[in-house]
Length: 296
Ligand code: UTP
Image (tube, rainbow, N blue to C red; front, top):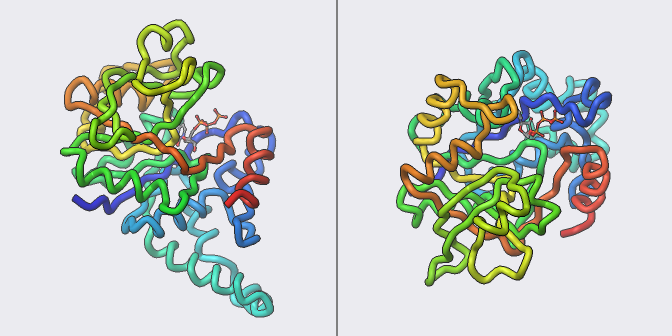
């Protein structure tokens, strides 16, 4: 089965980037690519997803923000375009962006009620197909294949189950990520049959319950920031929203993923060479801007 659709949520409040996020939403902060071109952060998701063969992309936004994103992608007026003539690579960029402006679609999250709630807004877009989901305030880069491509390819062998990208994390990172227990597949040890998912586990809980074979001491597998989601996730998120099942006041995707695991089974793919860049808080933003520009 081929994965055709992807979802990028950029509807969060970006509180930790205040006051800068009051001027520009964090997913539109400038980030310089390997080619030296400065683009809005979310723009790289479109480039990476297109390179991964994804045909339809849906961006989750706050009310009114679809126009801001469309405006960015449509590019400047004719006068400005004339000025770009002396920078042919930027002119090409503007053309490519206009193509995206026609192709991307939007889902609106009216209230900022969490990541799971944001994803639920794309139920109609998904239309019963598997979708790729990437964290809007992170970026990903593959060596040599896009991690989006690697994850999408898992649909061919997952038997309809969701698959989450995971990578190795240490004890002090547990507080930041959904973390798994599970058993590796014999024929492909990067693939894991997940037996438990806990969001931001305490170290004692992780030590007791979240083991995966062939990992060094004090090492776990935590969310990398992208998931391949089977359509039943929407049903589960719908139930959670109907029954007002919240964690820390929000509808969390990780809880829905654990319920999906219990009902249908769940897989994880260990990312071994792909890179992840986190732009979610100011200091990580500074470090990621530098490493995204220079670390190929
Ligand atoms: P974060 O967990 O970083 O939340 O979201 P946030 O609201 O953006 O930032 P803070 O905590 O206020 O500083 C991770 C990704 O999920 C999106 C965000 O836009 C970000 O790309 N998100 C989060 C939504 O789309 N909707 C939400 O309700 C929450």
